[in-house]
Amino acid sequence: MLRVILEYIVAIDTSEKTCSYLLLENMAKKCFLCDSDDEIIDFNDETFKNCILKLAFRKKKNFKYNFVELSSASLQFVGYHTTCYKKVTVLNKKYNEEFLQFSAEYAVSI
Ligand SMILES: [Zn+2]
Image (tube, rainbow, N blue to C red; front, side):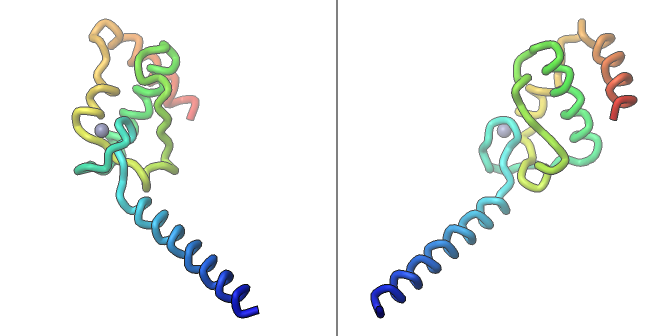
């Protein structure tokens, strides 16, 4: 009987540790692109919008990084590095026109 109780307590203890570990992990934001949590910058409205649009455009065009998922719900867990942000948001100049067109349509659809 005592042994069962002890095992029960151990089980509670372990699950609590898991919870606090998860909590800690969530507090350290990670980069949306490289997954590192080193010196993360928080998105603001402008950088977030820009990133979402560029990712949507990349998805549509099947460009590099078209698999990256970013949503407003993930904002509390992710931020970015300047270098990673640029990798995603800088497009070849020849797509400028097309991107402008795309972002105008995208803004209407949301
Ligand atoms: Zn990064």
